[in-house]
Amino acid sequence: MHRTRVRVVEGVLDANDTIARANRADFDAADVTVVNLMGAPGSGKTSLLERTVNDLTGVRVGVLEGDVQGSLDADRLATLHVPVTQINTDPGFGGECHLDANMVRSALPSIPFEEIDVLVIENVGNLVCPAEFRVGEHRRVMVASVTEGEDKPLKYPLMFRACELVLINKIDLVPHLDFDLDKLIRHVEAVHPGVSVLRMSARTGKGVEDWRRWLVQAAGRVPERV
Image (tube, rainbow, N blue to C red):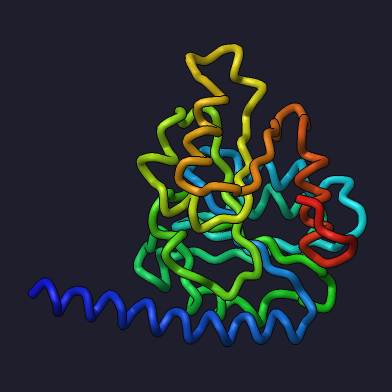
């Protein structure tokens, strides 16, 4: 029974990876860099995107918004006049707690690739499943908020290992919390040595310019420095 279950899981991931490669080929053909943005519910992914795309220069950004239900986050981003495409995992995919390659592929005809240089996929809020499913992205980034505590890298190491950039959000709240920012960074380093870390606040804008610069670099418009 145990061996059968492993084979089934491997089969699902293999099938996903096949579709992810097809997605990547389409992204490359469109000359669009795709960033998979992951993190827990409430980490501030949407708020950070709102702050990021406002006054962003150097690249044109579109968003593929993943939620189990509803379009609240997509509606917020659409007011900023950037292309936004919604994926809900509940009606068509059974309420999955992550986006997979097939879900993303189903949305490709709705994405105006000719109007964007970077597509940010805001994944469903979850610290486990999104890290396991590639969707064809070029880069993987996660948002970790200080309100989640310092222990999350140790409890959910795969998410931190799967990303090449960790954005530590809500640093404006540190003075009001029983929280050790340096300890969080040590834990991130322990599970993913050498990963890039940026500290920021989507509410105040502190540190967001570094994240904007990273996006421009990811799109290949200037040499990478992060």
